[in-house]
Length: 295
Image (cartoon, rainbow, N blue to C red; front, top):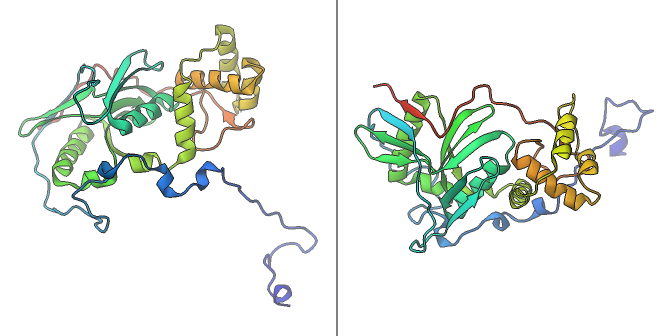
C-alpha cells in the first residue's frame, strides 16, 4: 500500500519500466584498507598521533630567502650500507637509469613510468639551495602534459609532513617552486596504494615495460589511437597477438613509451578506450633546469 501511495519514481511514465544502472566493483577494490598498506612500524611517523589533525608546532615556517633550482646528476642510491632498501632500474620512457631509496619512491617511479600524462621524469635530480637555509633534493621531478614541470617529495604517510623539520622544508620548497613556475606535490604511500586497481595496472605495466611491438605494429597502433574517438583495447589486442595476455604485455610496453594511453584507474577490458597521449604545451628539458627565485 505504501509503495502504491509513494512510488519510488513519482515523475516516471507509468507505461515505461525504469532502468537502474548498477556498478559492480572489481574484486581487488573490495579489499579492506589495510590490504593497501606496506611497511612496518615506521610507516607512520613515530612522533605523530593518529588523533592529531594538524602539526604540533603551528608557528609560521622560517623563510630561508630566495632559492635557486638546478638540475643535477646524482650517483646511484644502491648501497648495502643503508637500513632502507634502495633500487636502480632502466626507464624505457626516458632511456636512462633511475635510482632511489625505499618502496614508496619505487612505487612513485613506477607511476611516472606508466602514466601516459608524464612525458619525462627523473629521481633525485632537482636540487634547491636557499640563501639563508639548507639545500633540498626533490625525490622526483617530471614534465607533465598539463601541469608542466612538476617536482615532489615522497613519504610513507601524510604524518611525516606534519613533523616540524619536514614542514619547514616543504613550506620553503612550495614557495620557491611556485615562484619559478614549477608545481610542487607531496606524495605519500598511503594515498598511492589506496586505489588498488590503479596500483595493479601501474605495477603490471611497469613489469612489462621491456616488451616491444614491431615497427609495423606500432605504426598501426598509432594510426588507430589517433583516429577521432580513439579505439578499444580489444582492437589493439587483435593486431598485436592472438593471445590477449601476450597482447596486453605489448600494450604495456607501448603505454610506457607513450604510444598509447588509457584510464589506469579502472580495470582493463576489451572495451577500454585507448587514445593517443597528448603532447605538452611547452617542452622543457627537465635535466637542464636552472631557475632562480626573485628576491
